Length: 246
Image (cartoon, rainbow, N blue to C red):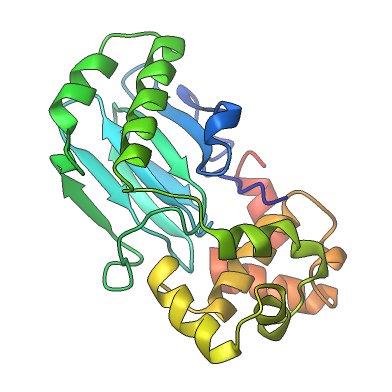
């Protein structure tokens, strides 16, 4: 099972909250979680949020000021976002490969949209504003169901097969065998589904797995783990654990 983690709030930062909740079973093949990131009070300085790569697409609603949504596309390395001194975000984290549009040209970035499919974002925004989180979750669930009905998002059989067998996958060739495709076919499909190569996908997934299990179950040795972790996050594992609320 793939459990992507976001833990980009520094230990020294107070008055910033991040929370996740699992989707209903009917959306479990589409959505990893619904999430909230917000300040409790006005911060003394700008907050910088460290985002880990996870191969997911996020649909983000900024409830502080904008009746728009932002599509956050997958990254292959960590990125840092300056969110300012006061903010309130609500989001949907889609599982890898679920977003149906070709994102190869916009991977590692974001797109502001006023409509997704035929769904006007302003209407969703208005239903989210001023509501408690449990009511917001109901709005997000219905919005996700609407996107599913329009085939904007859909379960991805190839990615599901790969994520279900992560424990037996060590190379790109292993991935190709799991989905019964040639490495060349897998390369082409990954560019369309995820936005980057199977090799980069495997590196991102291994990093994420290292937060939930011992690193030697996904890396060949400690030096390989430290080198890969630092290349992706900009931190050594020890420094990361000391800096962020892991």
